[in-house]
Image (tube, rainbow over all chains, first blue to last red; front, side, top):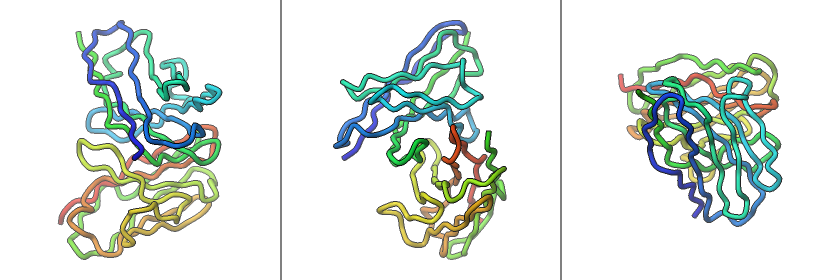
Length: 120
Length: 107
């Protein structure tokens, strides 16, 4: 069974840094993409970016490029989403998701979501 | 960046109704479109990929159609478990984009 397990919820102050994780298990191949999707409170899904852990090829939505960093460690089947300086507007649930097909995938499998709260 | 627009934003329907949700792309995306269902507090679930291919395990009452810029998701007979929010996603361009969602609520 394919599982994406995300790190737990966190409360941070504006200006702090944060790195959340997503660990993949049960997928028989290393040929996949991991994407990150934001959902602000009461709002819709926003596609942030994707990474191919095999060679760390990364693609960002123009809305998120420069605002976050997506990385991966293929040896431990994990992907990461990182902020260097959080803002209150980063408060949201962040989902990781796994996609296989194509250079920009749809997402077959999803993590449970990580709630990030940024508040002074 | 390709924009995706879903309509309606909210749809009120009854169990047993046939419902159709629409998703429009700002430029042609061929059939590179997926549909997801999301229930409150849960992760989205893939229903349809490549505009009309049913994901394994998804009930056959769900179907997708369209190509180019206009797409539809149809639920042939709405069931209690189907009340949720539905999102389309294009995966044609350099970056993917979701529509803003259609909430299907009980009439």
